Length: 306
Image (tube, rainbow, N blue to C red):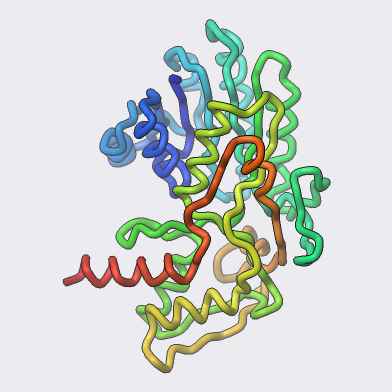
């Protein structure tokens, strides 16, 4: 397939590109800067010069494609307007493609309510979004309701990665403070559990959806449930801090002040089911032991520094 991806240099997007290229798909990806375009080339993608904030400058020049993965999000206050404008320009171009285009839109777990472990949530749950991410629902509905596209949606859990010299996603802030300040933070302490997924496993799900999912499908991408933010902080402290590493509970309000309003989600206690993706698509996450992955990052980082 010939796939166009937004957000291709990000944590999720770069993993998707590696996965698609390894399965012999042709990938085109949006790159704003020369640095971004060089990174895309190194990943094996063909860069398209452009910025999600100015879709009018590049949408009409897209090559023929079979599928789109929209994985770009800058977490700014203007993201709703940015996303709407992007779809305004991109969708008419996709309508003009020779064949129907499969459009995979990225939602997220923070579009759904908090829940308890005895009520494992599946994709039939109604939306109950955090205010900062409500705009995604308009984008989802627009893609799924378009009868000239084969629209689908994926809802990733909180994403992490194990590249010691790249971005480790959800783990990054605490790894940095453990190494620099001998301190880590646990939003909500042991009362908050975030469903998680490794970027490589998530990339596998994106590809499987493009290849196999039915139009209109929606799937949760979750590989790990039931680990509290306190436990994650303790594991990072053990592997990256000194013996006396300070583990501090943090309120969601304090997290929002530190990182931005999007961090409200770090305090949303959730337990999600990945059974539908496993049953329908054969998706099987390989990263299901978070502490093993954290230890792997620490070991790899030590090797890089030697």
